[in-house]
Image (cartoon, rainbow, N blue to C red):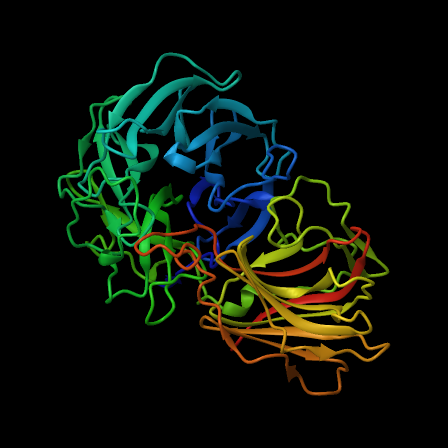
Length: 553
């Protein structure tokens, strides 16, 4: 029996929802303030996954002004075998201020997983993390009902209702199901499965931090009552010690960090059955920088093999509830160990089409600021990267702790507020950027660095390189375990030169962007990007010759 190495999808790939139709496996993840939204990954063996498509192209939602970590949360994939139709439900989190958590949940359908997908049908604003279960022509919606009343158990109650998917209307009222099956609290992300004579409800708990886990209950009727897993503990977690945290609406729970595990935060799972009736759970996970509790790669997707016990409960194949960095592959499969360089990105822009791995933050679908001309990518400069409306950024997910980001660009600014270059990006308040711009005296092009840290603007005024007339610079970022250094060269035959000393960018992580101890500031993760800014006339153009991200050996 071979092994599958985790994570199966590295980098930002949280809240996985996994589905098998025939011999094909599909998996969807959250995308927050990034578009296109909700990637669909495909596999035939559960080990090797490729990005197939995105469901949300941009016309379906408006993400302008989205604050981290709001946006598109927890998509759920399902297949109605009777109607032979794919369904996807998701939550658009619009506001988190005051812990009001104003969210809207929608359903979309398609006859083929690659689309076209229907227009979104509004379902509810009762909470977040919706899922669908289909049975005999009936459709059941499960979701977390968000609690805002003082003195009530937060974050809320799992509720369920039958829904008419043609109209989005409830067939009957909501049924309150559970506040959780363990004492970890913060129950969310309910999903329903049928096995034998029981309906099983899978739910995430413990908050999406170091106490995260997956718990389970079962019932003989779909609306319950549900009995909890008799162990009283999650069926999957990274931190197995007991935790009583009822009433805590959500927290990082840094005290639950497990020093004996490379994998942290295991939770928010989704089940799948193979054709040979083996069961697996896809779940989110995180890998902190060594010696820290900072996770720059965010929440990634992992996989564990599960077994049914004699009394009809699920447990990990090794009999424990602690998620591992490897798991057994399914029967009749051959999985190769994951090659970090499999996730490398290279786009020379010669095809006229951008790599499907590119994403952009906050935008509506108007990509008039992006074009491919003469085999080169042209970006029109727009708002500052502090903007949550229209920054000109094309980015890809960071998937390794050690890698190089590299590009070559031709750019001729006429004003000091026009720049173009490459960098590392978490959100609008947290990034670092090596750029080609105009000198303060506006007499020559220069290369320099600008940084945003917790919303503070930091200019590297003493690290400026003058660019000779006619030179076309290349820029490189070397990222290595939370430290980054920028380099340049003006000719391919010369050595790379450092622009500035290496600096600590470990704050570009889920925990580092907040500044409040004990809390998680974001859910998204580190991205690499090329971009352009024009706060002068919005008419400058930067020409990029290639984009490359390559993991170190």
